[in-house]
Length: 444
Image (cartoon, rainbow, N blue to C red; front, side, top):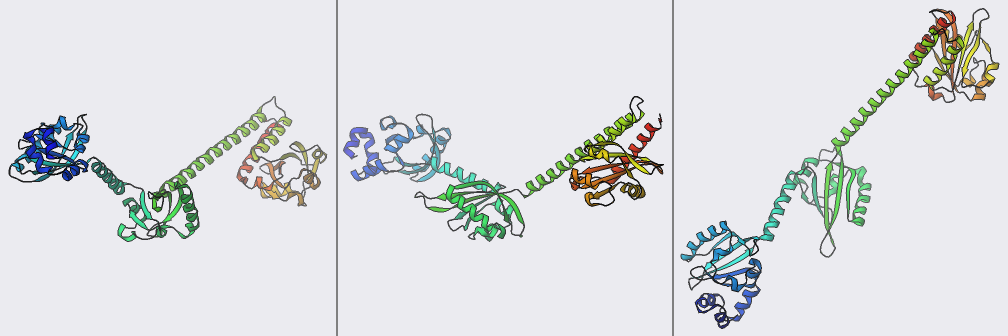
């Protein structure tokens, strides 16, 4: 814009001030295309010219801006700041300061203002929009706060996997200070046993662009191997060339330790409940046996059947045989059985002499016999093989030194009896002996 054109647009009273700035066409073109807002005022600080970017930023056209006091465009705080700097202009001094413009539509715009006096006595101001810079500054401050206070390790690597950023969280987790580890390869924190799995991890990052919360292990400065969750993002430039990686580690060592401890406690509680339930079932069965023994309406045969069925359920054996002792003939006679075929009934009686039952009476404790199908003391090996019985528990039934009989429990899998406590079997045998004695001799 030439001085002649400006004269037509603004009127003669503004031309001398504007001419100080717009001396020729080249200057006018520069003003119109510059990246900062330009404001020109007369000696009374009234607007005589604004460039196109000022119009766009403020929302006021050149025609609307002309004649407006310079403080018209600013918020209350900005007006106070500008008034102070007017005094400097009257002394012929330039200054720079920040103030907030209020646009036509009410938008607040932070500006960096560089003001200088013109030869005519007026003022020229160049306004730099700080909106983007302020936003970036806030983001930078937020980033610094995250890096400083985040408990997670935030690490940036270059394309060669060398460390270019090491957060405070990384120092806390791995023990390395920033100046100890910058420009070193991230392999420093990867334990030897994780090198191969880390290669697979990097392949996944390269293929997918990122991975998230992958559980792995890393090594601290002290040599301790810790459990971590790692997330990795591949960082590319505008041409999609790899420039590095963003890596975030979260230490889950304590979390896993607590989880393991809680799991152990949970399993202990479960075991306790199972044991409690088992003991309750034991008591229920024993109560039924005692109740049957003292019930006048229940027979001895009913009691014997109850005993063998209860012991099968308590021990989870596959078969049970109850024999009573004939003291005169020195024989053990089959009284009741459970879980065995009719063939067992053919073996109605066996000799007490040199039997496993005699051994149990001599030991005064129940005996557990593995490989029972090959034991020569058992007087029914063919029966054992026909049922595929591999193990046996024999419980002697006696009151003081009086022999009442025996209970034989059989299993096709020897491991079924390995967890059974002989103390428990002894107590059950004692209760069964008392109940059988009471029923047989009608003790009330």
